[in-house]
Image (cartoon, rainbow, N blue to C red; front, side, top):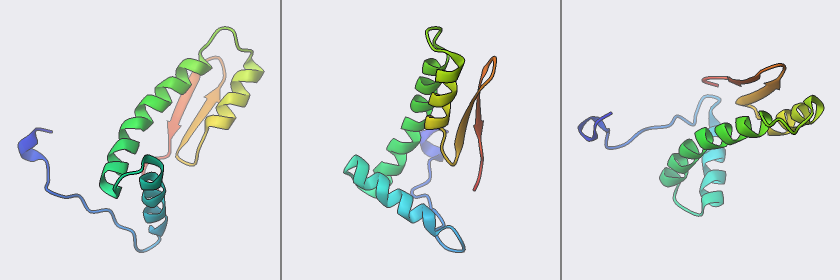
Length: 96
């Protein structure tokens, strides 16, 4: 998206069962020690890097399958799950 196409603001719905979103944003703002807008942007940027880093760890040759599965279970969240078989798979849950 070019700078000319960037909207002036983005609305996030927090009603009708989406109240958890506001709590998540508040936690991110506290974690990053910044305002809510920056916290959302930081978290969005970080998620790609964290998933890539987790994948690199799970692909290490010096770990046993059991260790990889334990790490995958530990790193899996509500929205991202790691599964170790013969390959490393990342599944996103999409819109919740």
